Image 1: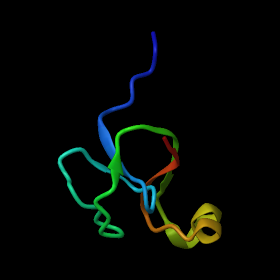
Image 2: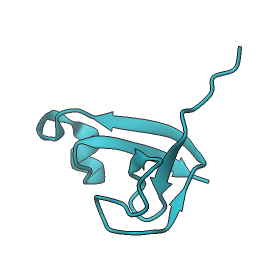
Image 3: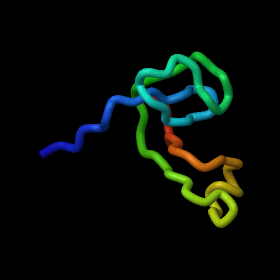
Image 4: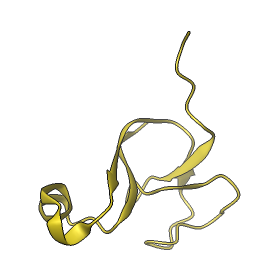
Length: 67
């Protein structure tokens, strides 16, 4: 059985994964959104996350690559 990604939108500017009903990124305000991405990171505690510190990400869901 193949894995099916839930329908979400991804901001092409900051790579935030957001709800499909949103038309503007809540993180950066961009309206350039995509539904196609590859891989993701979930930041739960940005103060204790090396990914968050190195990539300058806030808590939330982030795509690794937007297609």
